[in-house]
Image (cartoon, rainbow, N blue to C red; front, side, top):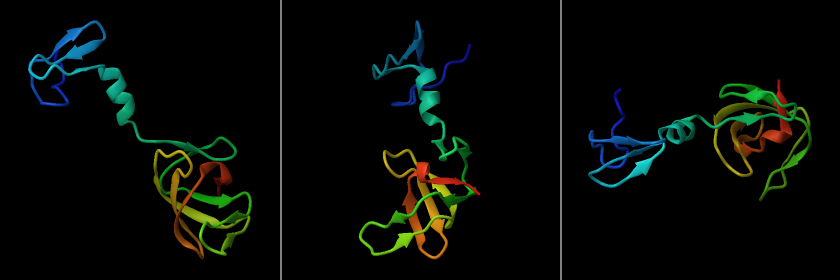
Length: 112
């Protein structure tokens, strides 16, 4: 069985200890299953529970005020998802029609 190299020092001398892998050179311990889960791309779900992907077109389900501006994005405004980030409030980096680039919370949109 081939074990992955150490993520800290890139040493090939890694050995298993139950569910952990240990590097004898730098002493780093890690669980390879947790690292695989962390490397997975962030995901977001819209107001209806549908999985959103980069490149999807979405529409707003309610009026949204833009912080620091008098601009209000109306219901039905369309946007294109450019990137999905793992954030607390704003998960979607979108290009909004008539407003430009901005971050939006996924629960306020639905797939178009």
